[in-house]
Image (cartoon, rainbow, N blue to C red; front, side, top):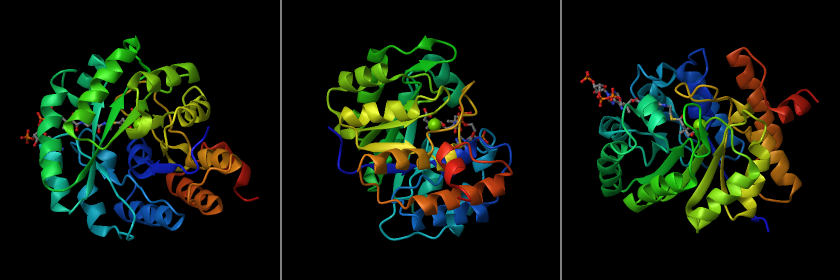
Length: 295
Ligand code: HMG
Ligand code: MG
């Protein structure tokens, strides 16, 4: 069966904008986030407190959090890799953070400058301190299906990394297909290997056009939280061949077609995508946006 309702975890302002060639001004980011909340989003990942030299597109995280309006009832999580990032997030009264781990050795090195094992030395004090401050902590695992350097990722390795993050006290675990190589059978096998889908979310990049099929598979396996990005923008600068995320509009089209509630207004989302495409100077890669914009 399918869930009655799905929570869409919007990553456009973070995963989307982190991979754009152009750096978007903080006031445009703040307007983007306000438009997403007005369209009905209740979880909007706002930015990252990472090293500004690693991701210059999000170097204005402090400026954005100062400028941003907060709508009551909307969550605005931010990415935090280490204690320095947590300190910066706490200065802004952030209530929810997300740590991001790698399922593979090579990507742990490239994305975090750590080994598969030593990444946990970085996360443990972050999660402990964040929980002590009353924050909610989400965890991502990247490269859950395959990695450009190591090929397919063994399921047991993903489950091991994921369980360790949940055991630290993370309330939700988002399974990332960073380079979009996963297919539906692999998705089902991975979720079943975890045993309990209730704390799992899925995060598909659409490089191979599999994101919607993979999402539907995850929903049938009991997952009810799905990450998506406005207009399908996004990617990881430290992952070769990563392209955009599953487009929020494409996901909403499918879910509403299935009678699954999202709380989102599709015309408002399409309007926001079109507005954003104008700011980025390129059309949205979303098929639904292309079909509906101007119609
Ligand atoms: P490092 O170089 O090992 O850091 O980077 P360090 O701890 O050795 O510190 C070196 C210097 O950086 C120090 O300054 C620190 O203060 C500073 P110095 O003393 O030399 O003057 N520093 C910081 N400054 C500001 N904010 C910070 C911070 N941390 C250290 N937070 C680090 C380690 C993790 C920081 C670095 O590797 C990094 O920033 N990585 C982030 C990469 C990233 O953001 N990738 C994209 C997000 S992940 C993704 O997109 C995947 C996802 O979407 C899911 C999926 O698709 O699979 C989530
Ligand atoms: Mg991603």
